[in-house]
Length: 124
Image (tube, rainbow, N blue to C red; front, side, top):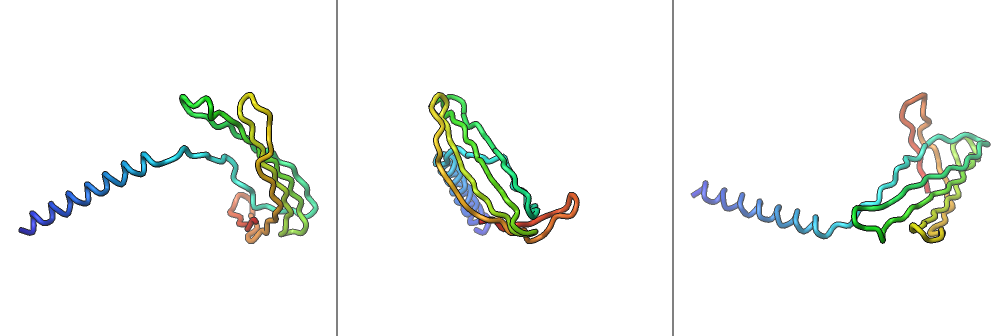
C-alpha cells in the first residue's frame, strides 16, 4: 500500500512540475541583458563621461531590432561620494534616436577596493 501511495505522490509531483515548466516557458518574455557592471570606485575631483551601448535583436524579429545607449557623467565630490547624471537613448534601426530616460543620482563607496580585490558601493 505504501509503495502505491508513493508512486501516486511521485506521479502528481512530476505532473505539476511538467505543467509549471510548460506554463513558465510559454509565458516568458525575451530577456534584455545589460552588459556593463558598474565600478564602485570613487575618486575626489575626478570627472568621467562613459557610454555603454547595446544592440538587441532576435531571429525572425526584424521589427524588434534596436540599439540603446547609456550616457553617464560622474563627478567625485569627496573620497566616498560621487554625483551621477545618466541618460538612456533608444534607436530603432532606421529611425531617429530618442531619449527614453534621464536620471540624477549619487553613489556612496562603502568598501574601498584594494588592488584587484572586492569593492562595494550603494547607488541611487
